[in-house]
Image (cartoon, rainbow, N blue to C red):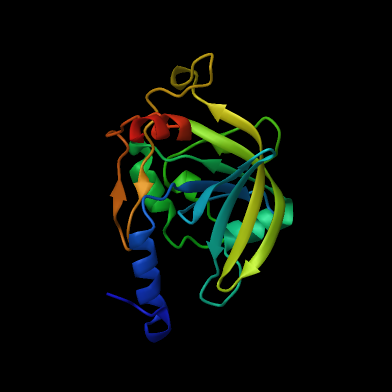
Amino acid sequence: MQIDPATHSKSDNYKLLTNLVVPRPIAWVTSLDREGVVNLAPFSFFNAIGADPLYLLISLGLNDAGEPKDTARNILARGEFVVNLVTEELFDAMNLSAADFPAGESELEAAGLHPALSTKIAVPRIAEAQASMECKLHSSQPLGANVLIIGEVVMFDVESRLIDGGLDLHGYEPIGRLGSPSAYCRTHDRFNVPRIGYAQWRDTHD
């Protein structure tokens, strides 16, 4: 079946796209407004895009008035933000933080969470998060009804029990975003398959 997005509504296209491109990690972003109030919001148009330097990307939708939402506005004004990762015990708090809180009212407090000092930036991370990434704004770009944010990771904050001396993670099980409007997945079920080299493949097919 072929589906031409030009013949469908924006909401239908969004639904199809977000149901096909799965699972998506969730960037649970803390930012600071001009008065120093902590804003907290989740975004699943998010991923890592580079390792040298360490870059990640978040696409933030505009509000109904066509203006940047609180998170985008705060990041553009201060040049800093934290991406907190969402594990299963934090799901309800994450879900609440997606509600349309008025500007100046902190989702962090409403969700019963606590700020923790970051190491290299002024924006706090979530104390309850098992892993967070402190970021400085590298660049931004308007992209249709979104603002594209590229951040450079300047510090990782990871619970010690999750990580070994070789920087391998153990017991880290974030949740992922599936389709619109409200589907998610767990990451308990995993498998490990070593990559095969061309020479090895060739030897098995000669």
